[in-house]
Image 1 (cartoon, rainbow, N blue to C red):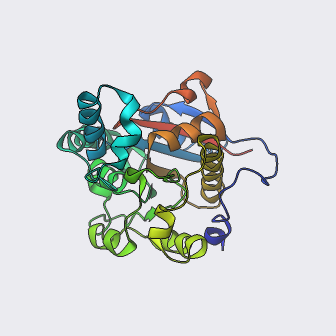
Image 2 (cartoon, helix red, strand yellow):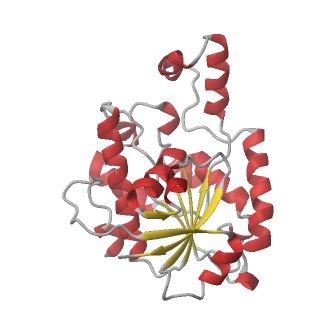
Length: 274
């Protein structure tokens, strides 16, 4: 059905020209009001970037020892460069700070209660959402909020070890209650079921990777449009969030859409599809 249909190849070409959805940035009090305003907004999207992860620290220390950014490509080639890293203590702290915000504003009483939580396949994004939404976690949540891992909520790894996706069995074991079916079907169809094949895919030029990324953010919006849930949380990464806000939607205010999300940042958007 709709799930499968939206998991077409993530390419920006071949999509029908259409007006991108309107996205209005709201503070959390405005977002709570917007839940009831069905005329202006089709979805209330709560976007968040994961907290600091182990590869961020590795890269920082590497730059200190190797005099600057020029050596970043080499850092990725190091044997002990973190693959699909988890959060650092500081990253967990950033998410705990966010959890105070979500506890204050995102619940039944304000109407801004998440009805769906979508996470990137990378462990730092899943871990971040679990810490940031402690009352919504699968297995403990009374509201039974679905947690879905979506393969298009991240950039293609393109050789970066921090973007390599862990094996499905490892993810299931680590994050019980999160649905990984979409990821499984995507890997099955595109890479004959092999995560290694996906991670080892040949590198492409940066421009080509960005076009692929825009295809992914647009595919995600098409999938989201077909879902019934109105208040949706997405836990992802700086590059994906920027692609979504700067290119896949008409962001208000426009210059804000170009701004990179900081680690642990949360923004709420009212979305109106064209």
